[in-house]
Length: 323
Figure 1 (cartoon, rainbow, N blue to C red):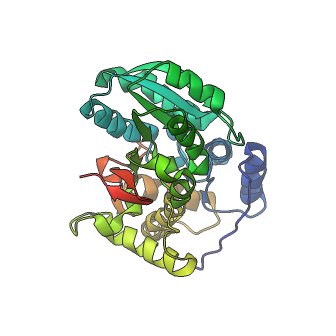
Figure 2: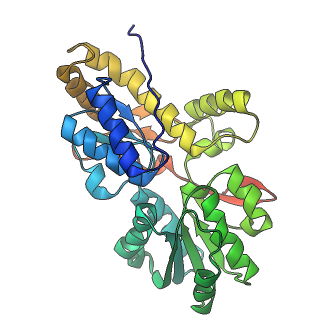
Figure 3: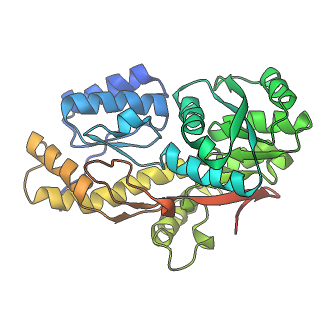
């Protein structure tokens, strides 16, 4: 029954701009909740402001553990540990023992190599080469040569969007025939378009929203997944769905249930309402959504379990669910 006012600002992926935007939201616009950003470095910046100003924050990109343990920030994407666990278990099942790693030279790339170092050994995996590259780079030939020279059983790529295609293509061009594993950040149709045949037989960890049509009717993520995909692709065309847009859909799925609960104790635009909304997000679950079933707790602002991960492969320019 409340009118919803949505204010959109573009941080261009820049943490300093994200900080300025977040402060504007809080100081000038008096917002009750912040959603964003789409990139990890910017989300970290927004989380800092949210924590300082006691403003509920739904982060739309993965963040390091110290950020997810904050009081005011709730994470929408699958955390790196959940994705890594599913990928590493698949590597083990595929007989992989040695792994080469290549990822972005920023906090997103750090997330994945840190997960490997933290839990990779539990799955009998060992890193034999580690390489990085910047998001704007147009070549990773040097890094790829070093990876191939290390002769790993498989390569793990810690990158997102079309940038994840750069090492994928390079590895195949240099004759690497081993398995390649990608995170959910690479699961886009643009990635498939750019990588072409180089993407075939890759294993991707993904949120279920990329394949709601393939989910059984009993899946708790199918209804919201189909709702997002149907509405989004009706507007933007077939094959335009992304996990990134789905995070915003899921933010609304959470808020639609949490806001009415907060309204029972306080009025919007007040510190009391922001505190009540934070509590409602933290304790009001489960929130069935397109990317998983969120159930946050005071000591868990990640909120997702294995229902938030599926394994996909690429065949002839399409994502296929791995049975």
